[in-house]
Length: 314
Image (tube, rainbow, N blue to C red; front, side, top):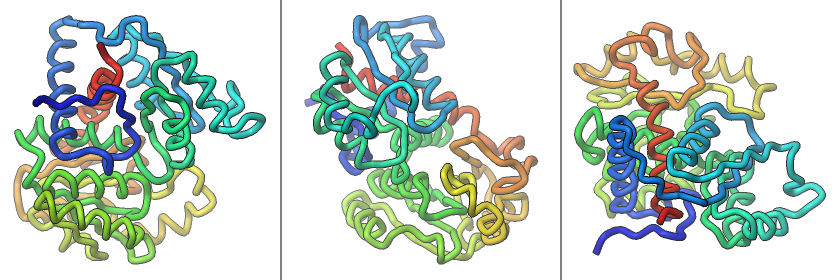
């Protein structure tokens, strides 16, 4: 029996099996090929989609908007000043109202609890466009890019360098643990992920054949890496810690010296963007032949479209 995700929420990859994740990646690859050929099957014809943004966005907003329009849906952007989410109106009541008017809801904001309440009370599929804890749509795009470059997802070595307790490190650890990937975080010990999440991911890894490692030695971490991935050193809402964080993470910059420490050819560089050049990554790396960051950015659109088509499409 084929994979059927109709009516499902997309809040975290914890909720998805490896088969379901692979299905979404393959669907995204198919939709990408069709778009390039000018084929639009309009799986979301006459659907209305609410796009709730507490945090600003380039890739997520554009991906959901273009994905909706390509598939025949109407996207409605609701910024933090457009609705009364959690202020004059509870999240639960907002969810009930939006669920009566829209066929699907995307949320990008601060609290994972908010997106989970929207899913619980709206009665329509809800998609997590980013929270402080997780970023599952980004990981789907990363996996799609990896499959395009290596022909597979499982069995590779994937190293995340930098802030090991931010939402990208969390989301990647969850996704890699589901997909049989050797996943390594290299970060200062003060920025290691929560032990509870590490143990949860190790349990997923036992089923998938993945391996999870955490170290504070970046050069040892990247030996034989297929993927080196980083993210900004200062996340949204943490700007007051900028100087402290930069000093702490300077030894974790992705540069030529770090790439040389892989000891192999063909390692690719990934970043979810936006990047602060010459901080977490040097300009020669992000602009070099090893960089796939703009393939990754484009694939946000195709994978987000795949999530909407799979969970909402006709």
